[in-house]
Length: 248
Image 1 (cartoon, rainbow, N blue to C red):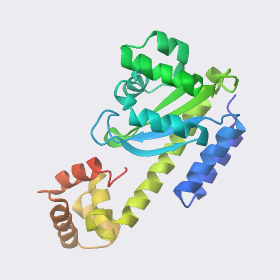
Image 2 (image 1 turned 45 degrees about the vertical axis):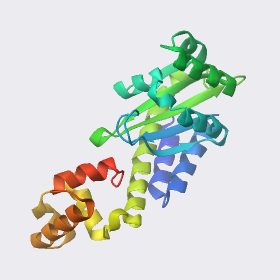
Image 3 (image 1 turned 45 degrees about the horizontal axis):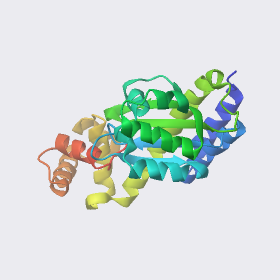
C-alpha cells in the first residue's frame, strides 16, 4: 500500500532542497526506508542511442562499477529493456535469467552475462518521459541473496510516483546549474530569455514577465543567436536543447 504520508514528506524535502546533492539525498533516504540500496537514475538527452547521450546520472555506491562498465561498453545501444522503456510509459519488470534467455544477439547476451557477474537478480525499470523528448529511467535492482523486490508489483505505483517527483526536481536543479555556469558566455538575462523562448512565450509575454521592453527582448534574442551561431531564436532553442544548455 502506498504511504501517502511518506510521499508527502518526500515531496516536501524535494521542494525544500537547495542543491542537487540535497535532492539526491532525499531519494536515497526514501529508497533506503523501503529496503532498497541498489538503484540507478539515468537521464538521457533525447534517445539513449543519440549522439549526446547522458545528461545526468545518480546511482547507489554499489552500482557505480556496473554503471561505468555499462557506459564504457556502450550497452545502452543494445539493451532491449532500455529500448522498451523508451517506447513505453509503464514500469517494466525483469529478471536476469529471462533477459539472458531472450537476448537478441551475442552482444546483448554478453551484457546479461556481465550483469550476472555483477550480482544482478531482478529489478524494475521506471520510464520517465518529459517535454522536448526528455527521457530518463529509474532502475531499482535486487541483487542475489536479497529480497527487497519480492513484492515489487505492490511497490510499482510508489516507485512510479517517486521517480517522477525526483526527475522534476533534478531537472530544476540542473537548469539552475546551467544558468549559473553561463555556457557560451550567455548572460543571466539571455539564459532567462532562452528558457522562455523554449517554453513558447512570445516576446510580449517575456517583456512583461521579466519587466523589460520588447525591444530589449529582441536585443537579447539577437545576442543569443550570435553567441550560439544560429539564425533565429527557434534554432537557438534547438541547439540549446541538443547541447544540454536547457533542461525543461
